[in-house]
Image (cartoon, rainbow, N blue to C red; front, top):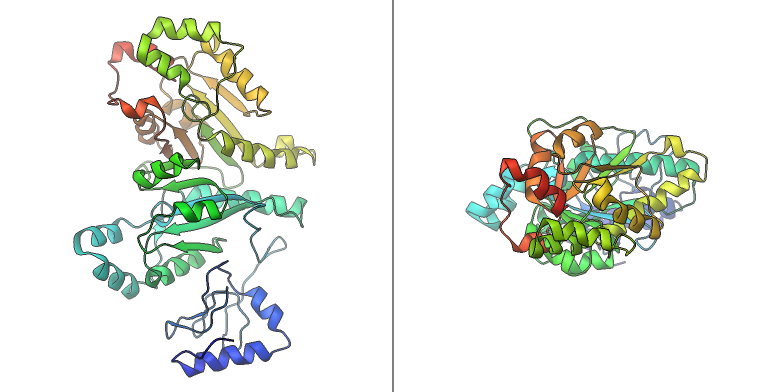
Amino acid sequence: MTDPPPNRSCWRMLQAAERSPRRFQTVMSVTCAQCEPAFICEEHRAAVANLPILVFSGKCQTSCTVFGCKPPPVDVGPSYHPHGPKPQNAITIAVSSRVLFNMDKEQQIYEQKGMEDYLKYQIEHEMEPFAPGPAFPFVKALEAVNTRLRDLYPESEELFDVVLMTNSHAHAGLRLINTINHHQLFIERFCMTGGNSPIGYLKAYHTNLYLSADPMKVREALEEGIAAATMFNPPEKRTEVSETQLRVAFDGDAVLFSDESERIFKAHGLDKFFEHEKTHENTLLDHGPLKGFLESLGKLQKKFYAKDQRLDCPIRTYLVTARSAASSGTRALKTLRSWGLETDEALFLAGAPKGPMLEKIRPHIFFDDQMFHVEGASQLGTVAAHVPYGVAQKLPQQKPAKENTKDFNAATK
């Protein structure tokens, strides 16, 4: 046990908990922040002990049973699992607080008035939960998949594990925790970097996907080989998405695949692109930045297939590409097959706009490397994320002239 903190009542509460014959149960039942040395009293905002758990006394908002707390009753349900999986076993999704929640006002205060005013505002409003952000439905869908997986495989740690990443100071953490409890999200791992880059932490968490509102951090993650994408404010007319089935849509080139074919078009034009694809239709494409994430989704899908639940699988994936099927689709499908991967649906649009098709699919998230596709999807209500990878990022991205849209898109996707 560490030296006592300034507040003696908090220390006495911890001593009683440590002496209790229910100590192990006590520790296991609180909200856990793995690897974070924090035992925090909400009333006094003082560290109680250097233990890897996070607990609140006074107005306790968790399901803890530490002496001194009177938590509200919680209906955990039959599938409740009190702890997340080990990072090395999980599919780890790291989300920044600014994409999980709507923090536009707070970000404006930080940019205009600085850190101290930002922290003061957060503390003054820490009992006011944030509204959902663009990644919120996606995270809820991940939890729905986990519920199904725990029903089928109670002892398995092959689950989604969401890590909340924020460059905020730890002082602002209570409002985030209150918000998570308010929305009944199952997020145990927090990483508050105090302005430092999160990249080192992403690697330590074995991150499979990083979603952020900061394009510079996303680029940094991609350069380190971590699948990442930039998310934006949710569209005004957001399409309703499924609460029971996770739907993820991917672009092809420079997202699942490398940007090799796109480079051919940029350098030599449309005719050479088609010629190149025909010549190399039996040559596999190299992997793109999100190939590993599709692989992770496929791994979980197979767990449902093994229980004869292919038709009722809570994960559904889509390839949505402006390639044309006849002239350039063969190579894409052969590449996926060689990787042992599949998408539930493949849409070869031959240059047609992606937005209307995505509006019908209703994915929780759509990944694309070109901003005009992201913006087009968003205008029709789809939450789209930008993957800043490949040759398209090195050239000005201008929406093609209307009469050339079909050929341009078919070549570059």
